[in-house]
Length: 109
Image (cartoon, rainbow, N blue to C red; front, side, top):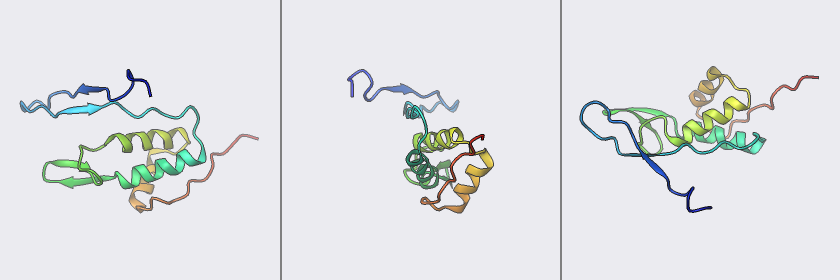
């Protein structure tokens, strides 16, 4: 990995209450094309990093970072590229099975 691409961070916008929310890492890059393996990783990411209500708001169930966390955003984008609609992604999260199999996309004949 090149030194220019590793560990870049940017300041997050202030939440308006005078608090600085800390530093936020950039989004994880998408694969050039989405394979079945990418899809399974994405399902695991959105299920394991699902939202959870907490006293301070909605956080990632896995690591308590503000939701949606980087992995949840990545998984959602990969599944959208695979052809799943927002309702289908929400159903996967609701089911809570990180090993759920997503059918291959329909290909025109």
